[in-house]
Length: 141
Image (cartoon, rainbow, N blue to C red; front, side):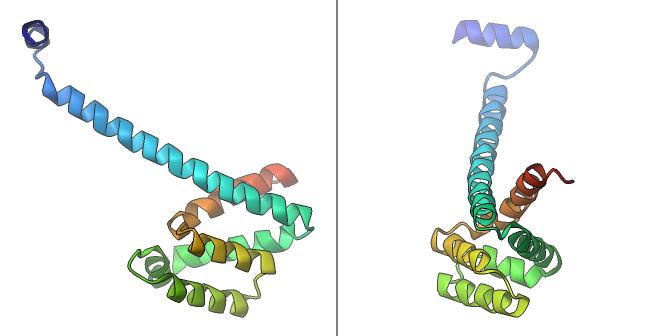
């Protein structure tokens, strides 16, 4: 400890301060990376399914609509992101939106899967990842 203290004193730093900030920033980066990987895998699965079934354009339109809803409707976003709200209520709200918007069966099933797996908090990221994958697949921007 004496060697650490003398080296730290020479630099004019406290020993505990840099270690704490490094550790906390590492955790944040690791958590963010995991969230992106999960979002990407869900988006990739939806893109692949929709493409395989010949419904990519319809599902893409649904995902765009969902993304716009999340950006413009704060109450909806708060409801589906709230961990206290029961899954059945979230499922019912999403089913009503899907019915009114005329979402494709695959989109509705996908939203139900996100509710079931408690992944609705990733919906915005999944929409972004879907858009990126869609653009790569269709060679569009």
